[in-house]
Length: 246
Image (cartoon, rainbow, N blue to C red; front, side):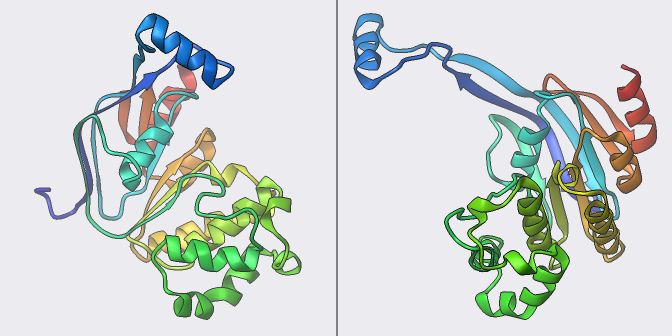
């Protein structure tokens, strides 16, 4: 990576998806169209375009932009969920991704069962999850619902559970996608306090958010994406201000 302080380095990254515009209602129609037209022709869509930036130890990064700007795609590349079509993504350290509400959960299982399941997805042993189980339940404030299948949970309850599990340890990098926007004000404050606690102990936070106040409050750097391209990267205050004025 070069500089030993750099923990995330993104170099000339592009991400292309193939979109199929035509809709079919059943398999028979799909086969007929395949035979008649020689198959469907996908339309290429560039979700990210030649993106470059780096994050050093001690920095927290807010990723901002309108819907469809490539924010969540960028976070998934950083989390290793996807590989870029072009360019390089280099990460140094342990990553705890909280990039999709309910990711790693089985909605037929109870909250209790999902704590151990999600812990395993994040690489924690059952024994270590037993040690922190009570702390997770206490932080999430879901004690009375702990043995309820999570398919009955609201989005706010899912957010509480996911955040409580993902932040039970202090990883090198924590990636959070819009989770702070779900739930009540008091729990949001608890989450922000937990993030500050982790950051004080060396965790680098990557936060995707539409709330510029949250980004400025939590992050010291910001990356503004627009249609997959970098509009601006630098100190969070000026970047967020420029985005709001655009």
